[in-house]
Length: 359
Image (cartoon, rainbow, N blue to C red; front, side, top):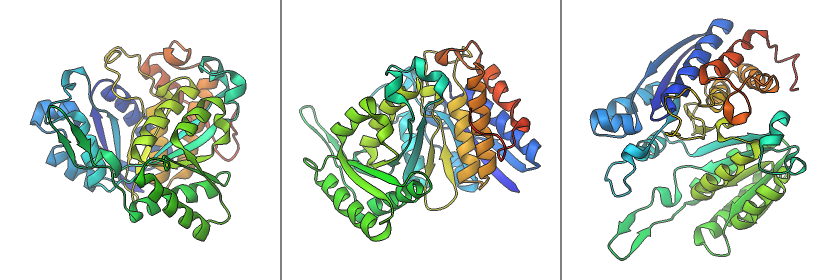
C-alpha cells in the first residue's frame, strides 16, 4: 500500500514523542513492506512564532492531502495569555472543524502491572476497559462567545444531525466490544442535553436494539469513573463533558502518558494524538512517556490505513514492554523517551498477532 502521513510535532514534549512516532511508522513500513510517505508541518505555538497563525494555510492544505495526521501537542506557558486573540489551541480546534473530525475516541485500558501506581485501590480498577467517544465539533467550544468587563457568555448548541452521527459511531463500536453504551448528559439542567437524550434514545431503539443502552448524568458518571469504572464499556457524550471525563479516566491507568486517541470524521482521514498535552515542565529532558503516542500510531494504522493486524501488533508490543518494566519514570521504569520507544520497536517483528495474547 501507499500512504501519506503528516506529522505535526507542535509544542513542549510534542516534538520528542512525535520523533518516536516517526520511528515506529518507518519500522512498521519496513516490516510489512509498506510505502509510507512522511512529511512535517507547523501547528500551535511553534506555528504562531513562525507565521503568526496557529494553523497556517500551508499546514491545513497538507492535512487535507494526507491519509492521516499525527499530532504531538500544542500550547505552553509562552503563549498562556487567555486574553490573546490568537492561541495555540485555536489551531487544533480549527483543524478538527476544517477536517470534519466530529468524534474523538479515547480507549482506557489498565495494564495489570500498573495497578499499583493508580491512585485507586486495585480492586476498584480491575477489568477497566472502556472507550470514550467524545463529540468534537459542537457545543460551547465552537459557539459564539461574548465578553465585557462585567459579563461573558458562550453559546452552547447542538443539532440532531451532530448527535446522531456520533451516537451511531459509538453504537457501532459497542457492537464490536461488549454491546453496551452509556450516554452521558446533564438533562436535568441543559436543553442541549435533553436533545441529546431524545435523539440518542431514538437512534438506539430504532437502529441498535441489540445494544444495551443507558443514560447517566455527568456528575453521577464522574463519581462512577472513580468508584466503579469497570461498569462502563462505551461512553458517548458531548464535547465539554467528554474532555473533562476522559482526563479524569486517564488517572485510572496511572499516567496520562499511556493513553492514545483518534479523532475521526465521515471518511478515513483521522487525527491521532496522545492525550497528555505539551507537558512543558519536562520538555527537552527526555522524560516523556512515548506509549500514548505510539498507541495513537496504532490507532492510525487501524482507522485510517485499514491495517487492524498492525494496530494489534503495536498494542501488544507496548503491552509487553510495560510487562517487562521497560518504560519511563512516570510508570515506574527508568528509561528515557527514546529507550522506551526502542523497547516497543524492537518487539514489533517478533509479534504474530494471531498467536500472541495479552499477558
